[in-house]
Image (cartoon, rainbow, N blue to C red; front, side, top):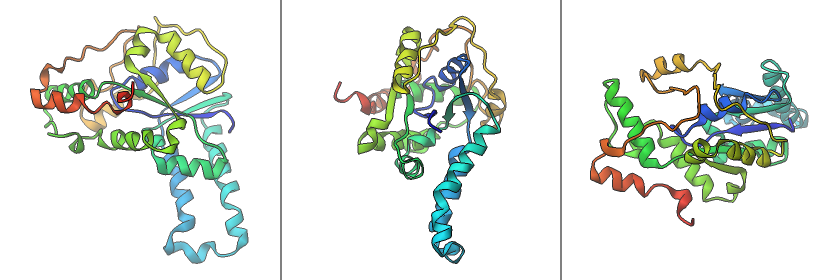
Length: 253
C-alpha cells in the first residue's frame, strides 16, 4: 500500500471535480465517497473494546492485529481496481483519530489532499441548495451537515499532524488547473500527467447521492473547467461577517 493516498477536505470545494480529473490518469484510481475508513476503523477499534476483551486475550491475537488490518486494506482495494495508485475519498480521513490509526497500522503518516474554499461561499452554496430544494437552512455552522469536516480539519490544521495535509484552494483548481494538479503529484511523489480539461466525465453515482440527501444539484459537475457561480448575497450581514472569519488556514498568510 505504498501508493495509497487520501482525498478529504471541505465540502462544496471541488472534491468531485478533483477526483474526476485525477481519474483521467491511467495509473490512478480515485474512489467515489468511500466506506473504507469506516470499515477499517471498526475492525481496528474492536481490539480495545471492553465487551470483546476476552476474545483478544493472548499474544497470538494481539500480534495478528496489524497484519490483519493490512490484509483488509489490500483486499478492499484489490476488489475495486488493479491500478497502481489509489486515492481513497472520504472527509473522515483528515480527522486526527484516523491519522493516528493509519500511522499505527502502516508505520507512516498518510498524505491527505484537502480541497478548501472560502467558508462564506461554502455556506452560501449550501443555503442556495436548501432554498431550491425547499429545505430548512441551519442557522449556524455548528448546525449544518458540514460542521464535522470543518471542525475536524481545523483541529488537524492546528495539530502536529498538519504536515499530513495538502490544502488545495478551489480558486487555484479552477484558474490554474494543471499547475494545481502538478502540486498534488509533487505531494504524493508521482510523475506529472497532462489532463484533458475540456472533457470532464465522472463515473461516480452522483445523482444517487443527491437523492439520499434530497438536494438536487448537490453534485453538478461541469464538462469543462469553470467556476461555479456562488453569490454570497443570500447571506445576511451577520452571517457573511461570521463565516468570512472562519477561513482558518489563511490566518498566517
